[in-house]
Image (cartoon, rainbow, N blue to C red; front, side, top):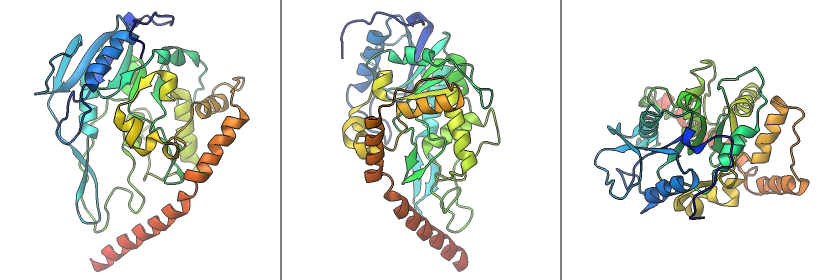
Length: 347
């Protein structure tokens, strides 16, 4: 990373931007944290956005020594939330409500026109997200929920999961846009606890897989604008649902790679997990694919510079890593259906 302060060649003054750094600043509860990553996160904001206001939104009893921020927001820990159960009856816990609480508490304190929502275990490598956010001006009337587009990274913004097309699968790592728009995308109720109400019904929508966490958060935001938007499960991907998803993404977001927007990821997401490897990356929306959605729904005159070699390379990677999983998933769905029917028959 360049250690010098970045000169602002963007149309938005850095002083009009607040960065909400949300989450734990060291290992917290059952979540491991890379040593020194929050210090690196805050330092990167000072370097890439000199003059921006930093709000650190975290939990009680965190060691804040040596952290460089302008404003501190402390929240009560809502604890983990249960979203589904495993076949052995064990509940599966997530930190969705923790993320909602720390993000929303920080966003509510923002006084500037623009805001960055940044995880405390990620960091900035550039401020290119500012120009990207300002670059795409054309909008269509349908599903125009935000005043301006919000920039999100493509990591976990999936086009495919388990070999199938998926809808509304938008990353929750990083947001940049108008404060009122980003706030609107997080101003919803906490995720209720999932409880077993029917034998074999291990998650909402079973035997389909549960809606992914990123889908759930984005859906809850969109339902504030259109309550009819809904998914029955992870693989709920009928033609109309995919159309809604594409239109929402084209008209309200900009989806670009972490490298394109200047987002640095902690070691866990750069080295260890599948999303850091080709087999994971190729399942995500690519920046050029989002541009194609922009052209399709918002600006037919937009020129997508998508080299054929790059497009074919992505297709072959998906043929190798993504599409073969399609049939495996179909088999697993049959097994899940049999499990559900067997448990209901026994009861």
